[in-house]
Length: 473
Picture 1 (tube, rainbow, N blue to C red):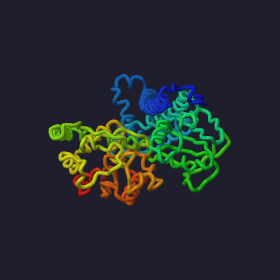
Picture 2: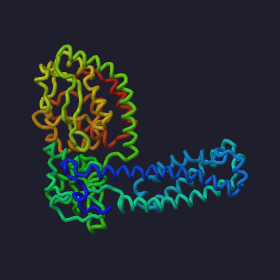
Picture 3: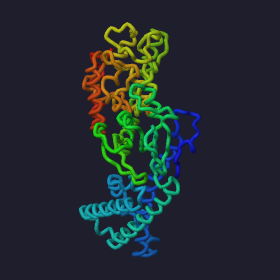
Picture 4: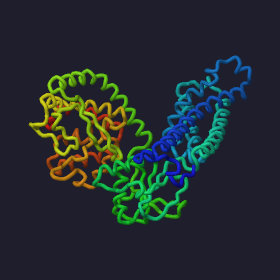
């Protein structure tokens, strides 16, 4: 894969999404290799035990014994091996790039799982049911095949994906020229990309460019480095800015790029790894689907009430800032008069707000108006738990949200949530003062930096206790 210029490979009919198709296909290919390696390892263990039994006990034994009995040891060893392999990085990205790394981790997982297997067998006194010689032969065969299959897998990956299975995007914003092999390249000037922290639409355009990218490297003049650093942190990707050193941007590390004989500073990294993202997404899908089963009758009643009392549309759709600062359409039950709905969110709802309908006041008080956002969760625009998404025109006092604190855009490195740490702490409702926004921002950043799946569960339970609150209007 030698792609010095992204424009050579992509049709830019949609200028806002320059590389989505190709980047997505590469991501899918990597996932196929991950799953394929797991399947191959599973088959390897069973084949190793089948061959070991044949070598030691002979073909007659295999003939007269059920296949399930011959591979009984493999059946018990497999879940132990896969559990350890998933946690020790056997199927991590660097294992796809270097067969020695992958083989070393696979052999370590095999050795540990074999030791645990023998301990369990001894503990429950099943030693007499297993042939130690067969077990040793199977271990040696498995180890040899693990090494061989990984060498073959890395060669196949390089044939399919090139030397680098990562999606790397280089953005040229007027800095030193970069010719990074096996990467995508865009010109910020030609694509209209800029680190404009005061322009949500510019951030949305940037988010569309970096979608499905694993790493983003920006080359820019010194005076624009800090701006790009803040944009990359908000995008929630592995982001690098090309320059020697600048402490004020809060770099996470220094990276020596031997391919281009220069140094970059790591200024951002996605807050969650692949396993964490998968666990969070699984929680979202499971809980939101179950919640919809309960919510559909409530939504139907609410929709009837809106139609009967007001006659206008049932749903209210508004642009909000989502993950990587990309805009998306959020869905709510309409609670305001049609002619006075605030599409940009410049005015927060307040107590006795004359824009809110009678039905809408009840819907807001019970948070039923938020239920359509379960569909946003299923679409992948939102998560059950995360920083609440804001409209582009939201004000804290007299200032736009991002004017209050420059770290504001960093809260979008995760998907926005139906609820969040700020909400269960009581930071809800109107933002009449700048401190109202600062309190929420501090809670959001604390949540992002300290995320665990168990914390999401606790926040969901806590949310159930504050569905009715005195700041819901």
